[in-house]
Length: 292
Image (cartoon, rainbow, N blue to C red; front, side):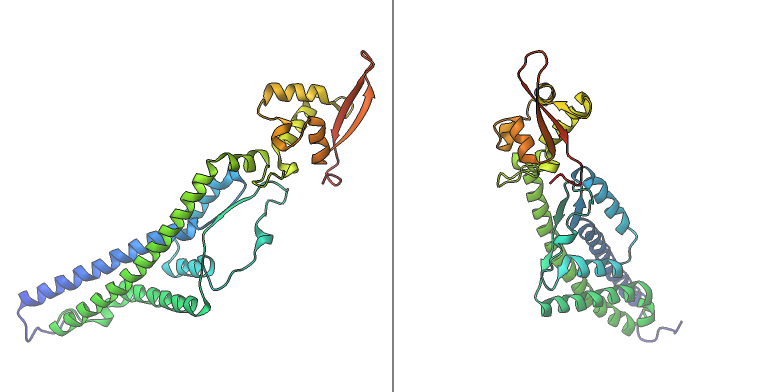
C-alpha cells in the first residue's frame, strides 16, 4: 500500500469507517429491495384451480428465492410492468378439462416512454449493485484521503438512487397488497362461494358443467344407477339428505327435472312404474362429446 502523506492515521481511519458504514447502508437497502422484489414478482400473478392456489403460490415463492437481481428485474419489467394492455384471455384457463380456473393478477400499465425510462433505470440499478458488490475497491482507493472522500460522495449518491427505487417498489407492493386484500374480502362473500362452489355467476347465469347441482346429480347417478339409468326421485331424495343446501331454486329452477333440462348434461326418459302405474322419470349423463 502507498504510505499516507497528508493525513494522520486517525483521520484516515475515521474516513474509512464512514465509507464502510455507508457501503453497508447501501448493501442493506439493496437487500431490502431484493426481498421486496422477490415477494412482488412471486405474488403478482397467481392462477390455477381454487384448491391448488396456495400450493401454486408456495412454488412460485420458492422459485424466485435464488434468482439474481438482474433476473428479478427482468421478471418485473416483462410481467408486472407493461407498456400496453395485452389480451391474454386465451391463457386464462389452462386446466384443459373445463374446470374452474381462478386468476388473481396485479399489473401496472405505463405509457411506452415511461415504461422504457423505468426499464433503463432498473438496468442501471442492477449495474450499480454489481459495482458495489464486486468492484467497489477497484473504483476507489480507500487507503488515502482523496479516495475515501470520493468513495463517500459516490456512496451518498448511490444510496439516494437505491432508496428512490426502494420507495417506488414499496409503493407498487402496497398497491398490490391492497388489491390482494380486496380479492381476499371478495372470496369471503356468498357471491364468490356461489361462483367457486356452485358455478353461479354474479349475473345469475350458471356454468352448468362445473355447478354443484350437476355434481350432486352425478354422485347420485353413480350410487343409484341401474342398467345405466338413475331414478330421479331416488337421486333427489339422496341429495336432500346429503346436500340440503342444494335446491333447484338456487339455480333459478323450479324442480330437479328443470335442472336436468337446463344443464344439458343429462338425457332423460319416462317410464311407467310397475308398482304404482304412474310415470317415473329417469336420467343418465350424456356422453362427454354431446354435453353442452
